[in-house]
Length: 117
Figure 1 (cartoon, rainbow, N blue to C red):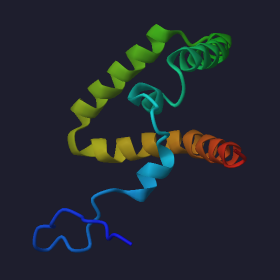
Figure 2: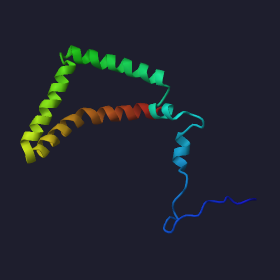
Figure 3: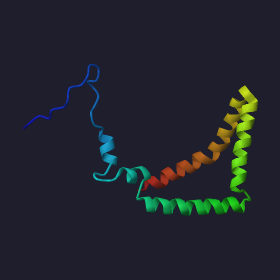
Figure 4: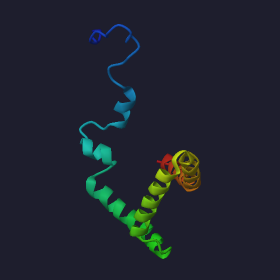
């Protein structure tokens, strides 16, 4: 039985591995990098993004929220943060907390749905 010859490791790197077994499990041999990055073929990802954008856009239009309103709200937010100075930290925390009320449950549901696969 022949032993596997690894390249020499620098001093202090005795516990380091040259290859990560976790990355080998996630990567399919011969799969293009773009497909791995996107999570599927570019056409399928574009179709999914189109459908999700259509649904989210319909909901936003139903709520009478236009794309320009979102951009102007971001601009107003950045101006307020700039004008507040050190009070901006408190203001940003409130925004993060308000956003987390929506984002965290949606993330949790998405993780539960992906766990079935």
